[in-house]
Image 1 (cartoon, rainbow, N blue to C red):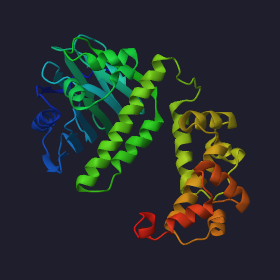
Image 2 (image 1 turned 135 degrees about the vertical axis):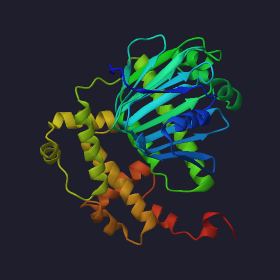
Image 3 (image 1 turned 90 degrees about the horizontal axis):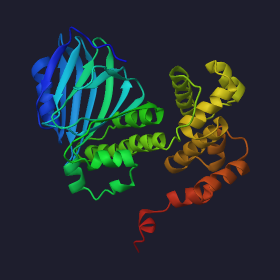
Length: 354
């Protein structure tokens, strides 16, 4: 449980939308809000905080709210749910924070890499607790139920029974909270969202598409938990972080001659734990994961360089061209040569212009 601070500065949130919420935060902590293509960002650098809070509001009842900030004092957001009460799908990429409903005494912790789904009942309050001097990277997708159900032809009946009731509770009669287990796949997706470089409308469209993916991953995790399909694991969060770091290292140097024994020595994790971690995070054994990233690298090289197939084979760590061709075709249902020929077709042939 989160230890409720006694000296925290309270920020009363009575706004009726996400923009109003951020502006009421700004009134207390300071900073400046700027807007580009419907993306708003509060930047602050003073004695209260250093960093940013950004938000985007979409017309289909979904908002993105992201914290990338260090508070220099302890703050508590007291949010009036009678004014604005969306379903919050929250994920803490870095740091931790706390939450409680107004009718509760205990504060629950949103830990790093944890998926949380929360909504209050009408007339109640949500309290969000932010520690001081801790880097926070928090992703929150907010769904306004009435607008979401009206604007989108979403078949919410396909949700599990508990979430279905939450979505259909348009009068906000009940509170709901789900604190999930570690989910590093969500960490990768949210990290990718934060790294989008495009600008203008293309950027907003890419963000909107990734919000769908992140939201579906939250819902899938809750569904697995309700069906008791959460994979049992003996791995600690520290060990999962080690495995995630190792997977990223393999992507950066796919040609290296990896062995399970060598990777075990490098991480200090037993081979069995390495296998368990890769299956949990990437649904593949270590060997399958290495082969997967090599094939993805090969496909990119075929598409974007003038290297011939033999050069590509050796550049990604394979020694047999015939073996590479075999597993490439099994994965992509096309031979490397045919794939290369297709990418080299003139534009008029690709689109069928005569």
